[in-house]
Structure formats: structure tokens, C-alpha cells
Length: 202
Image (cartoon, rainbow, N blue to C red; front, top):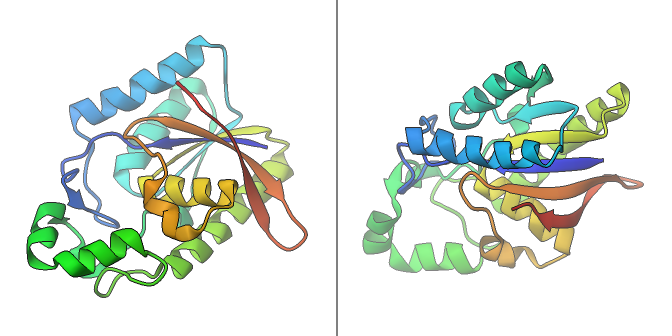
């Protein structure tokens, strides 16, 4: 099964760690996503279904696109961004100025350090695997071969890390640009689902 992961575009809180905060896309953010999708459609590549994070920076665009393309639209609550606890909505520069060592540890060793009162990486990973197992099951039940999944940078980075079989401390080095598409294969293993990297879509 092919899954095309679309990161949301620029938002009103793009300069912060927004995590579960439900901020809106800017006009530029909507345009970033629209441009990427149009480039994909111009290549005569289509999807059978659109899944989305429940946060509006993903879901409003995803639902609008599903209506345009007359596709099934499903919100999955498990594919939200990582929760950043006390850092939610705080500019990265402010965190750097007030807690430089903690922020540096989080960037370099996310498996060992987390935002204060934030979601541990292991819990984030488990949540995502639950969500993508549901997505796999829904695709299987409906004979859907390709899905567009509108989600977040942290989600795309983690799935790419898993697909490449990298140490999860490499997580933040993975690509996930605003408004860009990333393609993976969704695989069914003996005990849980897995991911295989395909390619970055221009």
C-alpha cells in the first residue's frame, strides 16, 4: 500500500513548538499545500482515500481536497503531532534562551529527553503505530491501494526514521518540509505494521 504523507503548510504559530495546539494555516501555508498537490495531480497520480490529523492545520485542507476529488475522508486522532508539554506554543528561540541545555539534549537525544511534561518519544511512536495499523486495516477492508495522509513534521520524521531503520535519535535530521509530500510503503508484518521508503515527491 502506498501512502503519500503531506506535511501541513505554514501556520500562524510556525515559529513555535505547537504540538497539539490547534493553530490555523496562513494563506501562504494553504498555497504551499495546494501547489504540491496540484503538481502531483498534474502527473496523473491519484489517491483512493484521504486521512488526516484532527488538527485544523491539516484537516481543513484535507477535507476540502477530499470534497474536490470526491474521495473518502477519514480523521485519525492518533496521527497528531507530538505533544510538547510546557513548551507548547513557545517560540524555539525563547526555549533556547531560557533552557539551552534541555533543548539541546532534546534535539540530540530525543529517545532520552523530552519537553517538560511532554510526550515521550516511545509513547509518540506507539500512538502513531496504533493509528497506522487502523489506517492499514481500513485500506485493506476497502481495497484502497493509495492514500494521502495529511499530517505533521514529527510524524513524517518518525516514520521516515523507521522506514530507513535508523536509530530514533536521528529523528530530527529526517526531512519534512512545510507543504511537501513524502512517499512510503505501508507494510503488514507478523506482529505489527512497518514502513518502507520510496522517494521524496518533487
